[in-house]
Image 1: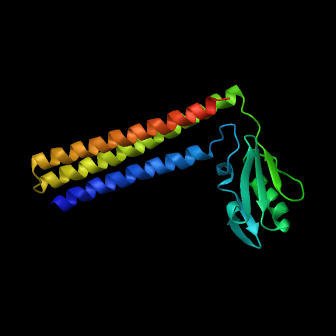
Image 2: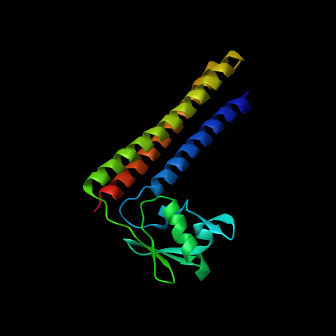
Image 3: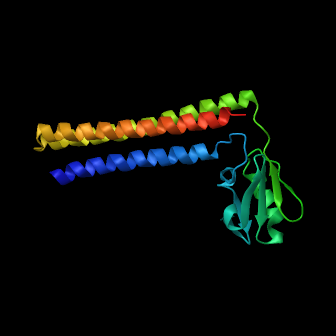
Length: 187
């Protein structure tokens, strides 16, 4: 019976971890007004007929807080890279100097910052819903085990452990959201 209890606890923990990972990934893509290579993480380039992540055909750097520089491994990749950035529809206007693709990241307006903060809070809330859903499913499984002979004390202990995990992951979500809000609102 203990193995089944542990299975529910492990499943809940894994789902809560995934909620945090997803939130972290989503927040990393939100533009906070400064240039980071993460902004181009999902850009795919046509590399001799196959779609390849931009990071695998070039070096992406940020010489300063407002500029992203993409240095392709091959000069012939400059145009496909520019095209891929335009197709990705990230709101950037890439330019090239014959050697590299340069993107100027414009500073955010106050209104856009507020909209981004709302988006961050919504993403945080979605992550919390996922964590609570994992808690509910684990508790439902534990109740079913109780009907199958699990002692009430063992069920209560396991539920307490699930609640502790839920609190821990909810706190992590709060922290991620607060950090991103601060980053967005810092001019």
